Image 1 (cartoon, rainbow, N blue to C red):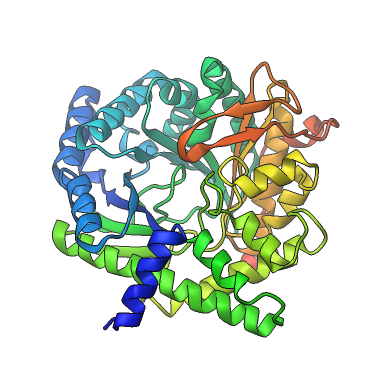
Image 2: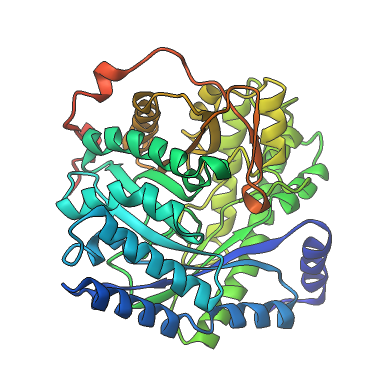
Length: 454
């Protein structure tokens, strides 16, 4: 039960410290839509989504009105489409037809994004997987709400370097297909290692095959709340600092738990997980970078940055798991460059580089996220960056991801503008030395020795 003090405290976090529920994401299984006839499949997919998720947006709006808790996004994730379309689709263009169906269904129910245009290829690729991956530039350039992901590795299976090399080409093709719109397609495409089945955040959300027919996953966010709490602990030792972060994460997660339970009850859909990630926005005061600077860094990227982020990530998880029985997804601290004003400022002044960001991904919740790079970056270099990040995830038994935007026609020092939650970013330099001889070898990097657990 909440007492009056806790109600007032939560209200203050919402009113003054930018606490919000970043997303309610309904996962929908499309396994029962599989059909050998493509038009029939698309019809089943459209009807399933628009039936199961028809009240999602309305319920989210009513919860906001009833409890005063901002719910920024309402989203849908679906079964990886490479599995759903495998029987019906004989070409990349066939898969793109399913993407347009997903887009139409998302528009009909009013959600801002739909995820699950995905392929899981950590050990190998089927013909359907290849068709879907090849379709990504067309699918993402002809839809507005569809988000895509490809899982290329895992601790258990190793890294599929054929898929990694292919994604280098596909990301450049997606950038070229949307070059008149700041290469926006790449902002809706993420490459994973150890992708979770229950992630509510885009662009990587999909509905895992082990999930129920439909579930509700909620992603909470509160960088501003954590920063304000740390301001009150200025000058204190690490013990006090960690306790402050844990207590704050607990309070943030309880708000998400309340919203998740309400949404589940009102929609008649089982509650899945709370993702307690600190997800920033471009708004001033809603930044993970500013939290790290409040801890004591002059700028993110300075010596000590990785240690500070590791501590923050761990304390957020420790506080959150006490507030909900079902914590999952990515859970931790996100460090997207374009979506975090503090990260943008650190890159602009030269404090933060791509290499330092890669080091930070060893201890944060995802990986190299929303990073703009020169449009003339070779596909092999993009593949090399993906391989590096996948290796970090594979060896450390954690989720890592890459969401790079090669901006066609622009170079280092120029800017790209996405708008909204996607923000803006300076274009960062990429190491000019090549890795063709490495990524062109093909095959699979084996799983690490510690993967052999049974």
